[in-house]
Image (cartoon, rainbow, N blue to C red; front, side):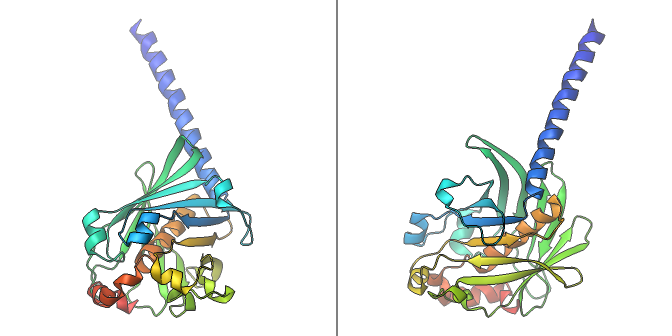
Length: 279
């Protein structure tokens, strides 16, 4: 009798295990088959008007190409990202130094969201080659997918992307003196900051664009405008590679584009303490 029960239990566990493997496989396939995505940070009225930092939320939409246009209100995001930070760090530290934990979830329905990977960064006070800014990507099962770091010296806004075996996969590089880096001007050319995705041989294989909604310089200086990105993934890139590229994008966003203009008076000193001025 006991042997029959054990056999039945083993059979049930086998079915549950197979179902879980199939679910995870479907989610990874759905993510890896997405060649273009649009990332939009959720606009927080309280945060924008009060200049008080809050936790960040991002929505990720699938796109057909760079020129795809759609209305966010009528589209269901394919993925949702919740960035958790400590309250005291948001108050006392610039975004380039804060620790954070991001959960990237597949938005299967309004009531069903499945974790596919997390992005983690510990607080580090960087000084030259010591404690270089670093963030790692962890799969839903706790397996490390890889990590992203800033190089020691670069005149460009650059991150290096490595897999779990410390093999260099990609660079993300952007020119530091692009106009929109400093102020949003009401013209098409100044609305976009471009980044190149390069392979380990420094050959361009895809690109990223940080865009704005043409709200103008005054609007940007008064409010903390939310981040928006359009991303082209390299052809035939795997789920792990796309997860690491997303990690690089969020790392750049947290390090360079989350600072408020009201903090400019002390921003230089804060960044020098973390050696961001040499990037």
